[in-house]
Length: 445
Image (cartoon, rainbow, N blue to C red; front, side, top):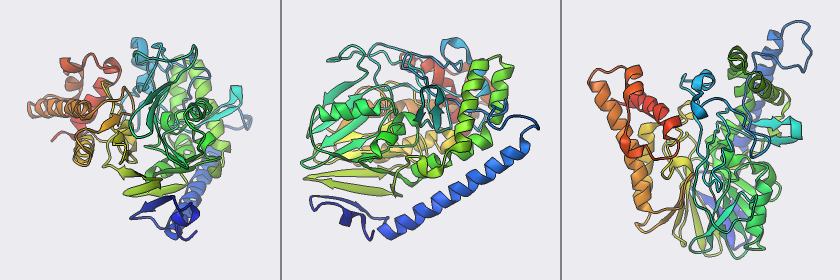
């Protein structure tokens, strides 16, 4: 493969100012080899630590990872919702902050549909389905929905220029229907991916040829396993790196969390986590449906007369964030760099940054027209005013932390006391606002 565009019809193409075919292949091969070495070493280290006489495949109470519910209505509670934060506090990120739930983009019935914080790529063994999950969590977002059949988790919203927003049970999906191909943004979860494909097929019979991942979290990449069979999956370099590293992260970071779950008396959770350790020990790196085409700065997909701009932003939600701008349609998909009237999850453990959010948002606002239509990662489709309101939330949290720090207030006291009334009606305020405040404190001057 000399250049990516040589593999595509004349009416289509992918161009990048930074990535050439041979360089890409060499880098991806090196990343896979590095990840395989890391996983092999960690497996070896884990085997050495196993207690004598323990069966090879029995769960070790030190092992830990979380998985998503087996069924949309099944609750695998970690303990943040409903005021039971003790267990969740035990399952914090690498910085020691309590894990926080992420709001899903569109939940028609206000169901909990809870996913909980994971740094994993998980297998739901009970139903024999392999499901990727990476640092995700969810809570219900009660919103009005239209044109939905009973038990249908999706709401399809036509926008301009053959672009559509698709709300479901994970991060919002966007897609563009071109004359010869469909470009999709994000894939939610594996169990929902066939439904996403069906919704697209209800609009067009054109083939789905491209899938762009906005970042590595499981409610945005979980359906990659389905799409990989017919689409080129595209993402920032760090999306691929983090997905390939997920087994190593499980084996390296999670053992103590099962023990914490057991100490908290949550045997069901400990069992669920241990099942994911089994996955991490057995999975092969090439089985992980990470992006096969990566970029480091920006990339363009040309389909018909539409140019799909893919821009990497400064670290905000994670260090692998990308936003997608459908140029002719004038529609922008922000991924989780934008939560509309939803308190965000800032994944500090994977490069997220409060200050970075401000820089990323300012940069994007400066690049798009004032009348652009915006698909957020979670929440309803909106406009630049909605995006600026989210930016104001980030700025207000950071400003509160700065003022408290200047006044000599300790971090613990700040997190306990801080409260911004203007955002109390945002979904997730009770669950994630305090963790946002703690992250802001760490970054405030």
